[in-house]
Image: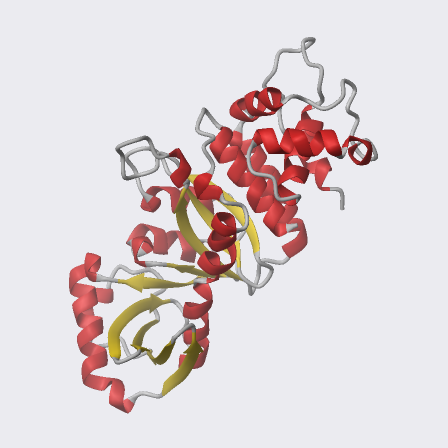
Length: 333
């Protein structure tokens, strides 16, 4: 499968008749540069100069290697939704069958775009992560002065997620989002926090009163100077939770207690989740919850450490968002 074929669907933002370089060549040069551990357009250009003979084996390069200014200028003006569509089409060809897949959804800031004196980066992206394949299926930028609550529905609406398991942290605990997931015939496990006051209180009290009579799953980890024990319970008995009314497909609630030891210090925490699963065991629920964080450990971590995304100072127009798409494609490759 030639990944370059997906770039032919991306519209060229430049004026006809004044271009010395082919758009798909420019995109492929940047992708190859990031695969070769480049950071930024200057390093990509230097890499391409060194590897021109190799690149000519599969690129046209009618006017040689584009300058770093050309790479930057073109990436500033490529329609980011079209480049993201190319990423999605490529990823979904590999995944092929979404049914039964675990799809984790989470957001990430591009911290290198944060203006001086500000705390929040202006560019924040939400991704759909296919956990088993370790591939980004889609991404959506969070609009300015908005949050993930708005971006996640826009991300899910065009995707065929029938039969998939969707996991989201507590920011996705919204009735409208749950209804959309059920409408698209997918299952969900979503974090529950005090942002849903009555429901949270009832679920917490339910587990505190009845967990001793429930089956449980216990797992332990030891490493990196700490030991952790996690206990998971699942309850399908929702008769005493009147606050579940209006939550589409809600069939079970999940409780997780964790104890973490660092030396002599012990940290204890309790977390709760709502789920559409009608017959899940504590082991199954616990695995979904743990593997949700693969989007942090296997995507966001690599974007920051392997590709040094948070240090990238490219800030103009669409270039930061487009480079994030290239990094995710390089990570998938």
